Length: 150
Image (cartoon, rainbow, N blue to C red; front, side):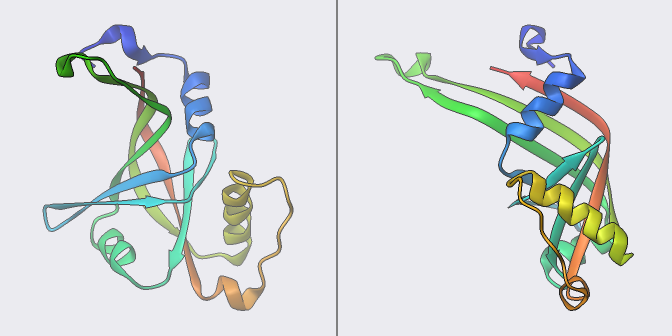
């Protein structure tokens, strides 16, 4: 990172940024073409959990190339000035890398969905078998992560 004064060094602070974020941007590569999509997510123990329909562009790309990049941001604010070159922004962000893995077991799917829903609610939920069989749940174990505060 060029600006070391903006680097987030504490893993606890990195996790706090992730937990404060409401959307995760999932970056993938489809035949050397980047593809980024914003998704709801859950986070626990350096693993990011996602769910989606069982078919579609995301699933197709991940089956061919499971290497991904994730990005979380929070506390975004635009700073304006009279002189255009003095405009800027403030934010906190985390970028991580990992490999997507599909979750097959109904028990692990339920656990992953509980983690995902905890990101947005303190309520308890149930997931009927017929619903679990129609959705895809996948996880990304973060192998590299960095944070920035601007």
